[in-house]
Length: 402
Image (cartoon, rainbow, N blue to C red; front, side, top):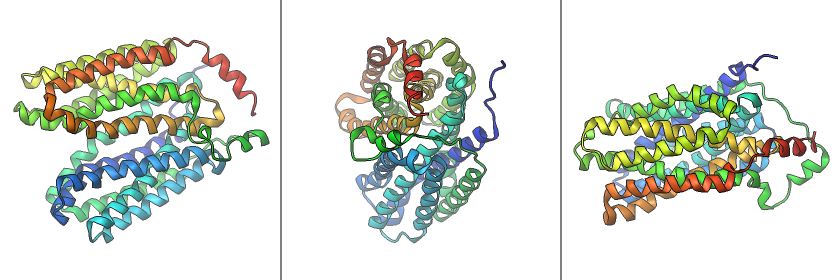
Protein backbone atom coordinates (compact mmCIF):
# COMPACT_ATOMS: atom_id res chain seq x y z
CA UNK A 1 0.00 0.00 0.00
CA UNK A 2 1.40 3.39 -0.99
CA UNK A 3 1.52 6.56 1.07
CA UNK A 4 -1.95 8.24 1.06
CA UNK A 5 -2.25 11.52 -0.84
CA UNK A 6 -2.00 14.72 1.13
CA UNK A 7 -2.38 17.44 -1.51
CA UNK A 8 -5.98 16.78 -2.46
CA UNK A 9 -8.40 19.42 -3.75
CA UNK A 10 -10.06 19.62 -0.36
CA UNK A 11 -6.76 20.05 1.50
CA UNK A 12 -5.76 22.88 -0.83
CA UNK A 13 -9.15 24.61 -0.67
CA UNK A 14 -9.43 24.54 3.12
CA UNK A 15 -5.86 25.88 3.37
CA UNK A 16 -6.72 28.65 0.91
CA UNK A 17 -9.89 29.51 2.84
CA UNK A 18 -7.89 29.70 6.04
CA UNK A 19 -5.23 31.86 4.37
CA UNK A 20 -7.78 34.50 3.39
CA UNK A 21 -9.28 34.51 6.91
CA UNK A 22 -5.91 35.05 8.60
CA UNK A 23 -4.72 37.53 5.97
CA UNK A 24 -7.70 39.75 6.88
CA UNK A 25 -7.02 39.27 10.59
CA UNK A 26 -3.36 40.30 10.41
CA UNK A 27 -3.98 43.08 7.88
CA UNK A 28 -6.52 44.71 10.19
CA UNK A 29 -4.53 43.99 13.36
CA UNK A 30 -1.56 45.92 11.98
CA UNK A 31 -3.61 48.95 10.92
CA UNK A 32 -6.55 49.25 13.32
CA UNK A 33 -4.50 50.97 16.05
CA UNK A 34 -3.40 53.70 13.63
CA UNK A 35 -6.99 53.96 12.38
CA UNK A 36 -8.40 54.60 15.86
CA UNK A 37 -5.76 57.22 16.64
CA UNK A 38 -6.08 59.08 13.33
CA UNK A 39 -9.86 58.79 12.93
CA UNK A 40 -11.07 59.15 16.52
CA UNK A 41 -7.98 60.60 18.30
CA UNK A 42 -8.08 57.64 20.69
CA UNK A 43 -5.59 57.16 23.50
CA UNK A 44 -2.99 54.41 23.35
CA UNK A 45 -4.98 52.25 25.77
CA UNK A 46 -8.22 52.62 23.79
CA UNK A 47 -6.51 51.93 20.47
CA UNK A 48 -4.97 48.84 22.05
CA UNK A 49 -8.45 47.80 23.21
CA UNK A 50 -9.72 48.18 19.63
CA UNK A 51 -7.10 45.67 18.55
CA UNK A 52 -7.40 43.33 21.54
CA UNK A 53 -11.20 43.11 21.82
CA UNK A 54 -11.07 41.09 18.59
CA UNK A 55 -9.27 38.35 20.56
CA UNK A 56 -12.05 38.30 23.18
CA UNK A 57 -14.65 37.87 20.46
CA UNK A 58 -12.53 35.17 18.87
CA UNK A 59 -12.47 33.19 22.14
CA UNK A 60 -16.28 33.35 22.32
CA UNK A 61 -16.46 32.14 18.73
CA UNK A 62 -14.13 29.23 19.41
CA UNK A 63 -16.09 28.13 22.49
CA UNK A 64 -19.37 28.16 20.56
CA UNK A 65 -18.06 26.44 17.44
CA UNK A 66 -16.15 23.82 19.39
CA UNK A 67 -19.34 22.75 21.17
CA UNK A 68 -21.70 22.73 18.18
CA UNK A 69 -19.53 22.00 15.14
CA UNK A 70 -20.18 18.25 15.15
CA UNK A 71 -23.90 18.75 15.80
CA UNK A 72 -24.45 21.42 13.13
CA UNK A 73 -21.88 20.03 10.69
CA UNK A 74 -18.34 21.15 9.88
CA UNK A 75 -19.03 22.75 6.52
CA UNK A 76 -22.22 24.43 7.74
CA UNK A 77 -20.28 25.88 10.68
CA UNK A 78 -17.66 27.19 8.25
CA UNK A 79 -20.41 28.89 6.25
CA UNK A 80 -21.80 30.43 9.46
CA UNK A 81 -18.40 31.84 10.39
CA UNK A 82 -17.52 33.16 6.93
CA UNK A 83 -20.94 34.72 6.23
CA UNK A 84 -20.97 36.31 9.67
CA UNK A 85 -17.47 37.66 8.91
CA UNK A 86 -18.70 39.12 5.60
CA UNK A 87 -21.46 41.00 7.43
CA UNK A 88 -19.12 42.34 10.14
CA UNK A 89 -16.45 43.41 7.64
CA UNK A 90 -19.10 45.39 5.75
CA UNK A 91 -20.00 47.04 9.06
CA UNK A 92 -16.51 48.62 9.17
CA UNK A 93 -17.74 51.01 6.46
CA UNK A 94 -20.47 52.28 8.82
CA UNK A 95 -18.21 53.02 11.81
CA UNK A 96 -18.66 56.62 12.96
CA UNK A 97 -17.27 56.49 16.50
CA UNK A 98 -15.00 54.42 18.72
CA UNK A 99 -17.85 52.62 20.52
CA UNK A 100 -19.25 51.27 17.26
CA UNK A 101 -15.75 50.22 16.18
CA UNK A 102 -15.29 48.22 19.39
CA UNK A 103 -18.61 46.43 18.81
CA UNK A 104 -17.71 45.65 15.20
CA UNK A 105 -14.26 44.37 16.22
CA UNK A 106 -15.83 42.11 18.85
CA UNK A 107 -18.38 40.72 16.38
CA UNK A 108 -15.69 40.22 13.73
CA UNK A 109 -13.67 38.28 16.32
CA UNK A 110 -16.64 35.96 16.89
CA UNK A 111 -17.00 35.31 13.16
CA UNK A 112 -13.28 34.71 12.76
CA UNK A 113 -13.20 32.35 15.75
CA UNK A 114 -16.05 30.25 14.34
CA UNK A 115 -14.63 30.15 10.79
CA UNK A 116 -11.00 29.43 11.75
CA UNK A 117 -12.04 26.67 14.16
CA UNK A 118 -14.10 25.13 11.36
CA UNK A 119 -11.17 25.22 8.90
CA UNK A 120 -8.88 23.68 11.54
CA UNK A 121 -11.38 20.88 12.15
CA UNK A 122 -12.05 20.27 8.47
CA UNK A 123 -8.37 20.02 7.60
CA UNK A 124 -7.91 17.49 10.42
CA UNK A 125 -10.57 15.32 8.78
CA UNK A 126 -9.01 15.45 5.29
CA UNK A 127 -5.40 14.79 6.39
CA UNK A 128 -4.55 11.06 6.39
CA UNK A 129 -3.63 9.78 9.86
CA UNK A 130 -0.28 8.55 8.53
CA UNK A 131 0.62 12.11 7.49
CA UNK A 132 -0.93 14.01 10.41
CA UNK A 133 2.20 15.97 11.36
CA UNK A 134 3.26 16.72 7.80
CA UNK A 135 -0.23 17.78 6.73
CA UNK A 136 -0.83 20.01 9.76
CA UNK A 137 2.55 21.62 9.15
CA UNK A 138 1.73 22.45 5.54
CA UNK A 139 -1.72 23.70 6.54
CA UNK A 140 -0.21 25.95 9.22
CA UNK A 141 1.82 27.64 6.49
CA UNK A 142 -1.42 29.31 5.37
CA UNK A 143 -1.39 31.14 8.71
CA UNK A 144 2.37 31.78 8.71
CA UNK A 145 2.37 33.32 5.23
CA UNK A 146 -0.69 35.42 6.10
CA UNK A 147 1.07 36.62 9.27
CA UNK A 148 4.03 37.77 7.19
CA UNK A 149 2.07 39.38 4.35
CA UNK A 150 -0.92 40.83 6.23
CA UNK A 151 0.89 43.45 8.37
CA UNK A 152 3.06 44.49 5.41
CA UNK A 153 0.08 45.12 3.13
CA UNK A 154 -1.89 46.73 5.95
CA UNK A 155 0.81 49.32 6.53
CA UNK A 156 1.38 49.81 2.77
CA UNK A 157 -2.31 50.29 1.90
CA UNK A 158 -2.86 52.61 4.83
CA UNK A 159 0.12 54.75 3.85
CA UNK A 160 -0.67 55.11 0.15
CA UNK A 161 -4.40 54.40 -0.31
CA UNK A 162 -6.07 55.15 3.01
CA UNK A 163 -8.10 53.23 5.58
CA UNK A 164 -11.22 52.81 3.47
CA UNK A 165 -9.21 50.84 0.90
CA UNK A 166 -8.16 48.44 3.66
CA UNK A 167 -11.83 47.65 4.30
CA UNK A 168 -12.40 47.24 0.55
CA UNK A 169 -9.51 44.76 0.32
CA UNK A 170 -10.83 42.86 3.37
CA UNK A 171 -14.27 42.63 1.74
CA UNK A 172 -12.77 41.19 -1.44
CA UNK A 173 -10.67 38.69 0.56
CA UNK A 174 -13.56 37.44 2.71
CA UNK A 175 -15.69 36.90 -0.42
CA UNK A 176 -12.79 34.93 -1.91
CA UNK A 177 -12.66 32.89 1.30
CA UNK A 178 -16.35 32.11 0.94
CA UNK A 179 -15.97 31.13 -2.73
CA UNK A 180 -13.07 28.77 -1.97
CA UNK A 181 -15.08 27.15 0.84
CA UNK A 182 -17.88 26.27 -1.61
CA UNK A 183 -15.60 23.80 -3.40
CA UNK A 184 -14.85 21.90 -0.19
CA UNK A 185 -16.05 18.32 0.12
CA UNK A 186 -16.07 17.67 3.86
CA UNK A 187 -16.23 14.07 5.15
CA UNK A 188 -19.37 13.53 7.22
CA UNK A 189 -19.24 11.87 10.61
CA UNK A 190 -22.02 9.47 11.60
CA UNK A 191 -22.84 9.25 15.30
CA UNK A 192 -25.00 6.93 17.28
CA UNK A 193 -27.74 8.33 19.53
CA UNK A 194 -25.64 8.00 22.65
CA UNK A 195 -22.84 10.12 21.20
CA UNK A 196 -25.23 12.79 19.93
CA UNK A 197 -26.87 13.09 23.35
CA UNK A 198 -23.46 13.34 25.01
CA UNK A 199 -22.65 16.41 22.88
CA UNK A 200 -25.69 18.29 24.18
CA UNK A 201 -26.18 20.00 27.50
CA UNK A 202 -24.19 22.54 29.47
CA UNK A 203 -21.10 20.82 30.81
CA UNK A 204 -17.39 21.58 30.58
CA UNK A 205 -16.60 18.57 28.37
CA UNK A 206 -18.98 20.00 25.74
CA UNK A 207 -16.88 23.16 25.49
CA UNK A 208 -13.37 21.73 25.92
CA UNK A 209 -11.86 18.39 24.93
CA UNK A 210 -10.23 16.86 28.06
CA UNK A 211 -7.72 14.78 26.08
CA UNK A 212 -6.48 17.92 24.28
CA UNK A 213 -5.99 19.85 27.53
CA UNK A 214 -2.42 18.66 28.34
CA UNK A 215 -0.83 19.91 25.10
CA UNK A 216 -3.10 22.97 25.18
CA UNK A 217 -1.81 23.91 28.64
CA UNK A 218 1.76 23.78 27.32
CA UNK A 219 0.65 25.98 24.41
CA UNK A 220 -0.39 28.76 26.81
CA UNK A 221 3.23 29.32 27.84
CA UNK A 222 4.61 28.95 24.33
CA UNK A 223 2.02 31.41 23.02
CA UNK A 224 2.92 33.83 25.80
CA UNK A 225 6.63 33.57 24.97
CA UNK A 226 6.00 34.16 21.27
CA UNK A 227 3.79 37.18 22.05
CA UNK A 228 6.85 38.84 23.61
CA UNK A 229 8.40 38.74 20.15
CA UNK A 230 5.27 39.53 18.17
CA UNK A 231 4.28 42.53 20.27
CA UNK A 232 7.58 44.06 21.38
CA UNK A 233 10.35 43.18 18.94
CA UNK A 234 9.92 46.52 17.11
CA UNK A 235 9.99 48.54 20.34
CA UNK A 236 13.08 46.61 21.47
CA UNK A 237 14.71 47.18 18.07
CA UNK A 238 14.18 50.93 18.45
CA UNK A 239 15.92 50.82 21.81
CA UNK A 240 18.97 49.00 20.40
CA UNK A 241 18.94 50.99 17.11
CA UNK A 242 18.14 48.06 14.80
CA UNK A 243 14.75 49.16 13.48
CA UNK A 244 15.67 48.72 9.80
CA UNK A 245 16.88 45.15 10.37
CA UNK A 246 13.90 44.31 12.58
CA UNK A 247 11.56 44.95 9.66
CA UNK A 248 12.92 41.74 8.12
CA UNK A 249 12.56 39.67 11.31
CA UNK A 250 9.20 38.09 10.51
CA UNK A 251 10.11 37.63 6.87
CA UNK A 252 13.07 35.49 7.96
CA UNK A 253 10.81 33.71 10.47
CA UNK A 254 8.30 32.90 7.72
CA UNK A 255 10.95 31.68 5.26
CA UNK A 256 12.46 29.35 7.87
CA UNK A 257 9.00 28.01 8.77
CA UNK A 258 8.20 27.54 5.08
CA UNK A 259 11.42 25.63 4.40
CA UNK A 260 11.39 23.51 7.57
CA UNK A 261 7.73 22.41 7.66
CA UNK A 262 8.04 19.60 5.08
CA UNK A 263 10.77 17.69 6.89
CA UNK A 264 9.71 18.49 10.47
CA UNK A 265 6.16 17.39 9.68
CA UNK A 266 7.44 14.18 8.12
CA UNK A 267 9.65 13.51 11.16
CA UNK A 268 6.56 13.99 13.36
CA UNK A 269 4.79 11.17 11.48
CA UNK A 270 7.76 8.82 11.15
CA UNK A 271 9.63 9.32 14.44
CA UNK A 272 6.86 10.62 16.70
CA UNK A 273 6.01 13.98 18.22
CA UNK A 274 8.67 13.87 20.95
CA UNK A 275 11.41 13.64 18.32
CA UNK A 276 10.20 16.99 16.94
CA UNK A 277 8.83 18.89 19.95
CA UNK A 278 11.86 18.77 22.27
CA UNK A 279 14.35 20.13 19.68
CA UNK A 280 11.78 22.75 18.62
CA UNK A 281 11.44 24.07 22.18
CA UNK A 282 15.22 24.11 22.63
CA UNK A 283 15.61 26.08 19.37
CA UNK A 284 12.93 28.52 20.52
CA UNK A 285 14.71 29.07 23.83
CA UNK A 286 18.06 29.61 22.06
CA UNK A 287 16.43 32.17 19.78
CA UNK A 288 15.00 34.08 22.75
CA UNK A 289 18.39 34.09 24.49
CA UNK A 290 19.96 35.43 21.31
CA UNK A 291 17.38 38.21 21.16
CA UNK A 292 18.22 39.17 24.74
CA UNK A 293 21.89 39.63 23.78
CA UNK A 294 21.57 41.18 20.32
CA UNK A 295 24.35 43.62 19.42
CA UNK A 296 24.10 43.73 15.64
CA UNK A 297 21.64 43.07 12.82
CA UNK A 298 23.00 39.69 11.78
CA UNK A 299 22.46 38.27 15.24
CA UNK A 300 18.87 39.55 15.31
CA UNK A 301 18.09 37.84 12.01
CA UNK A 302 19.88 34.67 13.16
CA UNK A 303 17.61 34.64 16.22
CA UNK A 304 14.65 34.78 13.83
CA UNK A 305 15.99 31.57 12.24
CA UNK A 306 15.99 29.75 15.59
CA UNK A 307 12.59 31.16 16.61
CA UNK A 308 11.13 30.28 13.21
CA UNK A 309 12.46 26.73 13.50
CA UNK A 310 11.37 26.47 17.15
CA UNK A 311 7.99 28.15 17.46
CA UNK A 312 7.21 27.55 13.78
CA UNK A 313 7.60 23.81 14.36
CA UNK A 314 5.98 23.56 17.79
CA UNK A 315 2.73 25.33 16.86
CA UNK A 316 1.51 22.93 14.10
CA UNK A 317 2.92 19.97 16.02
CA UNK A 318 0.87 20.90 19.09
CA UNK A 319 -2.26 21.26 16.97
CA UNK A 320 -1.61 17.85 15.42
CA UNK A 321 -1.13 16.33 18.89
CA UNK A 322 -4.40 17.84 20.14
CA UNK A 323 -6.28 16.16 17.29
CA UNK A 324 -4.26 12.94 17.47
CA UNK A 325 -5.04 12.25 21.14
CA UNK A 326 -8.77 13.04 20.83
CA UNK A 327 -11.62 10.84 19.55
CA UNK A 328 -12.63 11.44 15.94
CA UNK A 329 -16.08 12.65 16.88
CA UNK A 330 -14.50 15.43 18.97
CA UNK A 331 -12.02 16.82 16.44
CA UNK A 332 -13.83 20.16 16.49
CA UNK A 333 -13.61 20.43 20.26
CA UNK A 334 -9.95 19.36 20.20
CA UNK A 335 -9.12 22.02 17.62
CA UNK A 336 -11.01 24.78 19.46
CA UNK A 337 -9.50 23.72 22.81
CA UNK A 338 -5.97 24.03 21.44
CA UNK A 339 -6.62 27.43 19.84
CA UNK A 340 -8.43 28.79 22.92
CA UNK A 341 -5.46 28.05 25.18
CA UNK A 342 -2.87 29.24 22.66
CA UNK A 343 -4.85 32.46 22.16
CA UNK A 344 -5.11 33.01 25.92
CA UNK A 345 -1.32 32.87 26.18
CA UNK A 346 -0.82 35.13 23.17
CA UNK A 347 -3.48 37.57 24.38
CA UNK A 348 -2.54 37.70 28.06
CA UNK A 349 1.20 37.93 27.39
CA UNK A 350 1.40 41.49 26.04
CA UNK A 351 -0.85 42.74 28.86
CA UNK A 352 1.46 41.21 31.49
CA UNK A 353 4.66 42.29 29.73
CA UNK A 354 3.40 45.87 29.55
CA UNK A 355 3.76 45.98 33.34
CA UNK A 356 7.04 44.01 33.49
CA UNK A 357 9.11 45.77 30.82
CA UNK A 358 9.41 49.13 32.66
CA UNK A 359 10.69 47.20 35.69
CA UNK A 360 12.99 44.53 34.20
CA UNK A 361 13.68 45.80 30.67
CA UNK A 362 13.51 44.01 27.32
CA UNK A 363 16.72 41.99 27.72
CA UNK A 364 15.67 40.40 31.00
CA UNK A 365 12.18 39.78 29.59
CA UNK A 366 13.58 37.63 26.80
CA UNK A 367 15.86 35.75 29.21
CA UNK A 368 12.82 34.97 31.37
CA UNK A 369 10.84 33.87 28.31
CA UNK A 370 13.68 31.52 27.33
CA UNK A 371 13.48 29.97 30.81
CA UNK A 372 9.68 29.69 30.45
CA UNK A 373 10.11 27.80 27.15
CA UNK A 374 12.62 25.38 28.68
CA UNK A 375 10.31 24.86 31.66
CA UNK A 376 7.54 24.18 29.15
CA UNK A 377 9.62 21.34 27.71
CA UNK A 378 9.66 19.75 31.17
CA UNK A 379 5.92 20.38 31.53
CA UNK A 380 5.37 18.79 28.10
CA UNK A 381 7.19 15.65 29.28
CA UNK A 382 4.94 15.20 32.31
CA UNK A 383 1.68 16.12 30.55
CA UNK A 384 2.21 14.29 27.26
CA UNK A 385 5.75 13.27 26.30
CA UNK A 386 6.05 10.27 28.62
CA UNK A 387 2.75 8.72 27.46
CA UNK A 388 3.09 6.09 24.73
CA UNK A 389 -0.30 4.40 24.44
CA UNK A 390 -2.47 7.05 22.76
CA UNK A 391 -2.98 5.22 19.47
CA UNK A 392 -4.21 2.04 21.16
CA UNK A 393 -6.54 3.98 23.45
CA UNK A 394 -7.97 5.97 20.55
CA UNK A 395 -8.68 2.89 18.49
CA UNK A 396 -10.74 1.55 21.39
CA UNK A 397 -12.51 4.90 21.89
CA UNK A 398 -13.31 5.49 18.22
CA UNK A 399 -14.82 2.03 17.87
CA UNK A 400 -17.53 3.03 20.34
CA UNK A 401 -19.31 5.59 18.19
CA UNK A 402 -19.10 4.32 14.59
